[in-house]
Image (cartoon, rainbow, N blue to C red; front, side, top):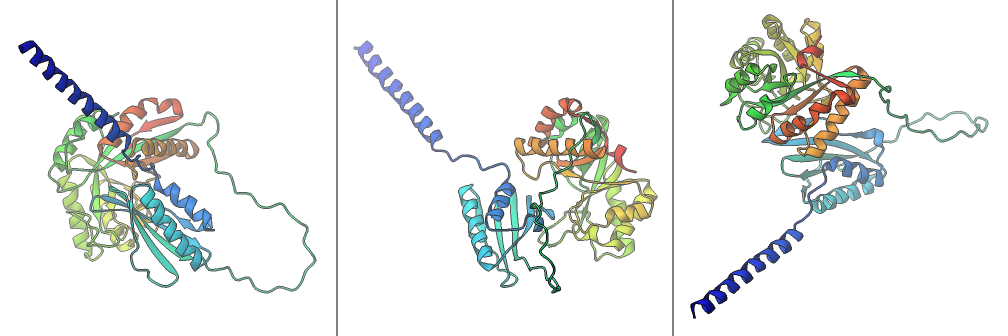
Length: 383
């Protein structure tokens, strides 16, 4: 009797396990696919379909960090209002198809439209405008010109076979957490770290990375466009500060991050475009014997210009590695950095002290030399 009862019990358990396995397979099969690694490529395709001039598309100008979200600002010029409305609808539909949400803030005028696409840690703020036709003065009739072949796009320059270049990598936004510290400390010592001041682990991370042979940089917060909605964090330099306040803020931030060999800007799309502010920032850096790398969060930046005017060793960022936080996207950006350094002899790539970035670099950097890039410290590329 006991044997029969045991057989029945085992049969029930076995059936339950089998049912759970079937259910698990079914649920996994119904999971939605991951969104594409770069929604920017989708925007380019949609814009082309609506007649946008590729020469009048401003992509990622600027990129800013708002509440932990990387906001990529785009402007796309389209032929007319009909194309503008259609493209706005296309973007919203594509966002939904890729698991993102789209919203349409109020436009500034009848000739503009705005679409925001939110994808978690990344967002696209897309401004659509109507391209104004170029006015050409009337000319006297002339003879029929000789037909010419249609112009072709200028091919992108490529590095010469066997060309080599120097590549520096700087990882920003350190200081809030030590979660990725051990992994980052294990990267090649040429990889630098930029530490935000006045955060819970700012000094700890600076000391640990310095002890492992890495360059430490101060990631100086500066006022962005849209402040206070976009908050650069403690110790920031603001446009409204007077000259003494600017120097005092920079001085205090430097003192908070031990072993700093230089400074690069955190945010700063407004402050780095103000020559007075940047001049006083550079005055303090010159007095402390520090270098400067312009993160170039806006194309209006005058930071590098101010540094060179005062004799502060300076350089600029050429490639952002991880605006899109996926291994595939980071590898693609690293390849872009390699090609850039081979073409121009040197390049600086900026990423973040983020687990996926650190992991991807740990996998890719050992093979960097075979691809024509010599990894160097960021300080080696300032001049």
